[in-house]
Length: 577
Image (cartoon, rainbow, N blue to C red):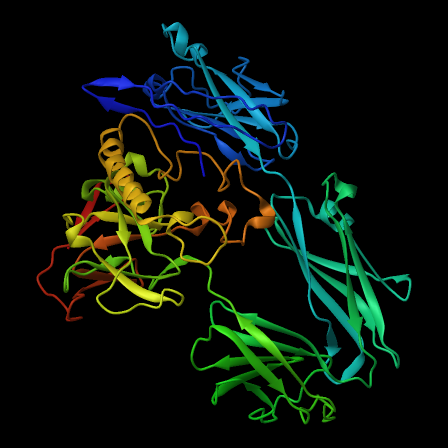
């Protein structure tokens, strides 16, 4: 979870809503941080939660500041203090935003207490508002190694192979650092490792080169050691079997659940992709299967989603790329586990016609409820919003929009539901909001561990507890709407600076629905929708001409007699058609 400061108003008086955080990691100061909501008069956003070790630290003021300087030079004043100390400089980003840029990467897993000297920017402050104290933590760096099945460089040449894999890190890391952690050897001799790194610097693809298959079976030993880059408790190894050239067999079987369910069967040799696999690979209680053959892999698709344990039969007679038949079949149990709790959107449309109400469809699995938030971008602010956003953007929402609704929605139906598979649900937005033509609405769906139906050991959330959570959520609706103009909260993407981790986040548990680390903002989905029955197509032609077509989205018929107004970037009317 994220620890947010949210004051509330009662009888016209600002009262203190205390958020208490007990931090149990990194340098473990167990300090209680209390934010005085009166700071909301001067500060609209600040860095908090768990952030990258390469992040900057930001403060955004409520108003333009007279000390703003756009020279790009560091601020002369020593406006930030950090404990532990951080070497670096503070800069003006714009008239309201100050950013502290650390000189070097911050250590991972450290809790920092920051003091921002607000009295250096605002005159005549009350003494208790002179220093703004806040807290953040750097991500605890960790990594996971996934060694995959070897593959031939050329399908018909079985002797020389490559062994691919992926390293995923919890925080950004340099290419040079991550490449130090991995080694591989065959027959006691080191093997070359090639790398490709994704731009986010958290996903790192490696390929162990020139793995040789011989007449006798051998092994490739892959080792990793986080100590080499100061990541503790991150040592391990994986021994990969390299069968003999004459041993054509099944190497690995894995059930893949998403986005489509199938059984992945990996063989020691590339396969003859033209052979008919019907009857050669069978799944218990499934008469009809579909197969996709790719190199040394077969993807086996059941026509109906499976649950529970099934026997998989792999018969002799399957041919490799050289038409040699596998001599020994196998059978084993495969387990189709429950799908992890998730929510996803059905389509990518951003214009929502009024046909049959304003219906917003989505899909969910292993969830009994979702939280819904709706932020309205006012029609007269749409041009301002589109100056820095596409239609589906979410930057600087507070300048143009307002939270207009939030609610916990139970996922129920008049018909029996199998919650263990993806089901389609719909929100009728006309029952939640009064849609203003021309306005944009940001619809956000989220869920917590309490809404999960995924089977886990331990205590379950009772019906009474569920109802209490719904009541608290809906009570917060009035509070948050009344405080829109008083203080920012986490749903303004560009105004609350944090990464998607809570203080109790554990990278190793990130994919385990039975832990808190699985849940959070990264599981949320959102879409902007424009309430309109009209669609406009604009086509640029030669001689600086443009052609416009307007259609009725409910019937797709063209509409005549429409007046179009064209504005420039400065929101000035430049033409009417």
